[in-house]
Image (cartoon, rainbow, N blue to C red; front, side, top):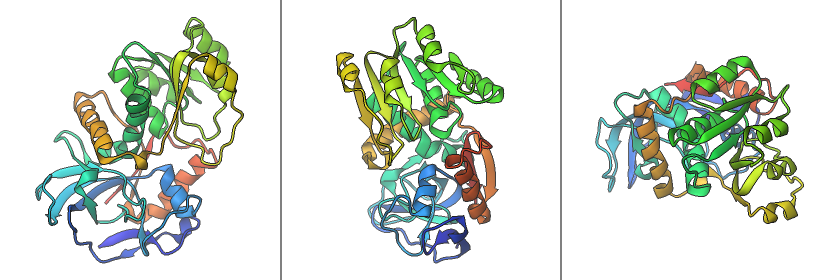
Length: 331
């Protein structure tokens, strides 16, 4: 089978495209004929070696996938040959990735793809959708009528936070860097969209909430400013962080506990299969209802995986600002 893989970590040039043996599904696994995959910042960090993980060699890149079940391994019972599926959590913790024509995936990490949802759309939703859902609902326990703030409303996770919060009729305040991105957030139902290049964010948030602050702050930035965040929180508000492995910011302990705030940090790939399946159930329903529509900013064929990685790295690490939404590879 064709696959995008590496023998050693490094810059995007270490990615090779060529033939590897087609995997055989083991106990509890199914073999997926991959139709589409998507890129995430964690793919860049693993490929570069910034996040050290035990990797099989050769290591196939990628966390997310969508496709069709080609074969069923021993003791696998949730899917049948021909079922369309999507999933994430691959290429992590010693597992092979998804950037290939075929992937052997444990059925615990796969979910049925609704008939009306394309492979590209399902793959683009996977990791970012599950991440957004875990933070909003498992941890922050977002409720109807509450106010959510999220930085970067058109980013991978940010766009999912905006749309999921609106799906449960919460109010949403988000930030963007252009009028084009502001229009996109408004089309998803964001109540207020601020431009971080020109707006006084703290003053505008206080004004928009009548001085009460926000109930849930979903932080997507790598360097959280907790002095600003805590000041803008409502009493008993919840703060969610899911980025910034090297960050060690100043933390305002006194104001934090006086307001009765809570702080949740998590890595999506540490969530249990049951936790992630609950996310997938909601995601599938919202995809079908049209309440969730992940933006796909760029599409490449699988053989251009190195180019796609370079493009994502330019935007993730170098802040090029040339990407809105997800990068998808078609297989």
